[in-house]
Every structure is written in structure tokens, then in C-alpha cells.
Image (cartoon, rainbow, N blue to C red; front, side, top):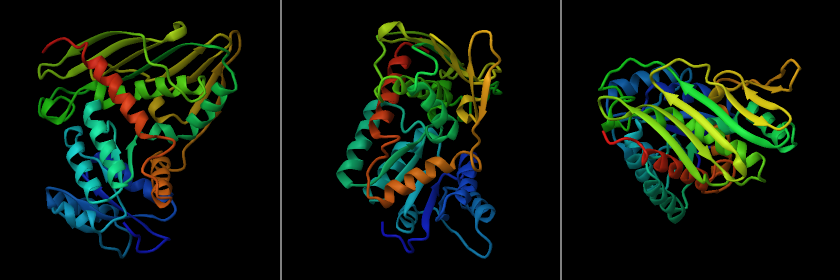
Length: 337
């Protein structure tokens, strides 16, 4: 989609919910980025979102017609419930409109492969919005891991949990909206595992040789919590828990032969990194983001689209497919509802 002005990059939002608010706020930190339109099934909700995030003196296009939005923007950000990602990604790619889609891209690897194939066939950019990949804290920690600051990687541990009130109609608990803790938050545990292994393996992530999985299902049949241990070549393990049933500090640790690298709190939103050596106080380095953290993925998508790429070298199609494959394998070990 040609741009109306090289100084402006017009973003459209599909699904003006809570996560889209964070996206809209982050546009202010990305040179050239501006919100140009909103697609919503509920026009009043779409208009309220537009009124909140429009620049002074600027009216945003609000529509219930998807084709109208796709024709008026340089790229779309898809922030619907997980169950609707595939239909909107497909529609955008068929229209030749670049896509930044909230994680998980879709809910199966097979479905993801279809969209990747379509992206390549149409020459339209597609990237999963896994914002942790672009946080300054991960850039710093990645350098430490590559430089061998922790010695040999031995194990990875992480938690991502929060107590959520049970409401069978809410997207987190509703199977019709692709609810469940693994898709919603466990993907961050898996993405961080893959990221850490890539840092110490020249950019490559080995496949697990075994998986131990224990999932607790909610009355609706979605996973309320997942405890898993992934086993990798060389005896390296990754142990994680995700769930809607408990509180946690949501820390991440990469345990090495010489030291431990740690994101101390909320590793999915990390703004500091700790290096911990035996008998020493943690060496903590701050690495804050510019605004709210989403600006990194927006800037990456925008730069790739302007360069004519169909995927990001930092969050490539293969990475999204690998994450979906791991989640397929873990879900295959869930108890039958």
C-alpha cells in the first residue's frame, strides 16, 4: 500500500480493546507513526477509541467495513480475541495490506503455515506482535548470554501467573474465543525459552527431546494453568508455569555454570536485568523502554514494511511457526475435558 506521505505511516487498528490502547499510546514514540483508522463491529466502541487516540484536530476513520479500513492505511494492527486473528490476517493479506498481529498469531501451527504461505504469495508483510523481542532489557541480556557471562547454560525457569476471576464468557475462559493460559500468557514463557537458547546457540534453537506437562482445566475446558518441563539436548531444561489461578512475581532465570541471569519482575515487561554470582550481591542494570514497550515492535514492523520485506529478521515467520508447534505439542498432552 503506497503511503500518502513518507513522513507519515498510517496504522489501522482491528479490534479496539484494551491491548489496542497500549498500541495506540506507543505510536507517539515511533517517528512517522500515526493512527489513521479503526475497524470495529460496534461502531460506538470504535468511535470512542478513535476519540481517545486521535491527534488534536485530526479525525480518524471509523468503520464497520473491513475493506474500507484496509484500503485507507499502510498497515493494520490486529488486536481481536485469539479466535479471530486468522480471519482478519487472511483478509488483510489478500488485500495486500501489511499485518502486525497480536500473539499468538493463531492457535495451531497448520493455521499459521497457511497464513505464512499467503504472506509470501501476496508479498505482504506479516509479523506476530511479540513485543518482548524488542525490549532494551532483552537486547542487554542477550549480549550477556552471547558473551558467556553466565558460563554454560544449564537450565531455564520462569513463571507467568495472575489470579483471574472465573467468568465463562470472558475471553480468558471462553473456548469459543480461544481462551486458556498457554495461548494467552504461556507463549511468553516459551518465547523467552527459545530466545535464551538462541543466544547461546548462534541464533538457533534446538527442539525439545521430551516434554513433561501437567495442565488443570477450567469447567469450560480451557487450561486454567500449565506446569511444564521441556528437555533439550545436552541436559538443558526449561521449567515454567503459566496460569490464571495464582499470583506470581513472574520472574525469568537462565541458570549457568558460572552465574544466573535474571529478569527479576514481570519478565514479559522487563526493564532491568540482574546478573547473580555466588556470594555476591546481584549486579542489576536498568534498561527502561521509551514509552510503554510496544514502540519497539511498531518501529520494527514499520521499518520492514518500508523496506519491502514480507517478514521481520528479528521476529521471522519461522519463529512464530516454531512457537505454535511447541504449543501444539504441549496442548496434545492436556487431559481430555
